[in-house]
Image (cartoon, rainbow, N blue to C red; front, top):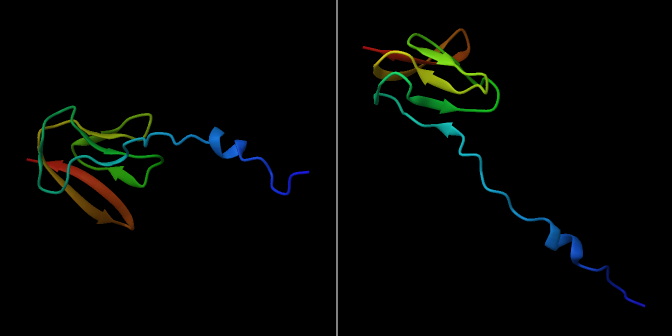
Amino acid sequence: MAHTKSGAKAKQKTSRPGKRLGVKRNQNQAVIPGNIIVRQRGSQIHPGKGTKMGRDYTIFAVTSGIVGFIKRRGKKLVEVTN
């Protein structure tokens, strides 16, 4: 009788690729309309002036300009200013 359990379960757990989330355009970088600024799960960062949020919480630029991250009333915001 075997004293250790079979190791088949470890073979079934394959690693999955990452979802490529995070900040795509940093502070003081130039963007044009349609550029993705942040990909996220849930709204950790909120849209400010010149940005909108997609249905998967992706924040993208609506106007062209420079990206800026600010904090207002305890929330992190991302803005695009000229």
